[in-house]
Image (tube, rainbow, N blue to C red; front, side):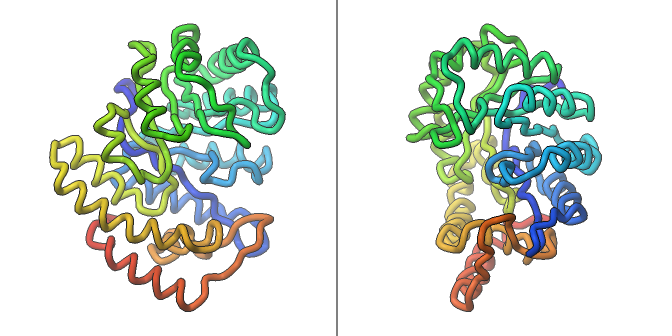
Length: 302
């Protein structure tokens, strides 16, 4: 991939059964779903993927399967953050080996690095191991390290392969603008997150794209494409419908709403997480979910 990364880079959720087993067939079906959806890139595993509950062998296996299933249709960005620099470097090397187009990582998320020099060394090691562009994922604690905009911009100047950021510090819009202003040509793009809630205003701020958790990647991509074409009024109509569904799933037990949408769309065979309590949706929630899906279904393309 030689063009700058831009657009909706959909984050794959991780499918589990009720016993906590990773469902590889569902995962590969999801990879294909994202690649066919109109999304402009694929990302896995990061926070929306429940990456902290995945084993090291699962992450290595998932990297290979993701690249194979996407099969070059869109760029693949693989998450390599871990609790130690050594583990993250090994994951970054594997991402480069299996053919990823970029990697994404926050600094080690359990015990934080003590100073900026350590963080620079960390990202330099990731870049050298992967040999492909690096996204810095920047979010607030407890997982994130909330790096400053001037420091992020300097990272891109010091390390040529550190070229992109996913900016998620609150307030996200202000943080996106601050980082774009602090950067130069060494920072090739600032992406945001938060499920594309503020995608329209972020596009106006100059964001290069968004990385939302995957369950309606075709809808998110449609909004982005309309914005790129200068059709803001149409983009807002699609976004209104999207937010009916987003609001519905936010009020449901953790993980269950979005995964149930993927079940309804024929991507996942069941909706479950790992380790946490899998509280099933009740009759009222299921009815709300069906109503919300009907609102946004006209914009589905896969």
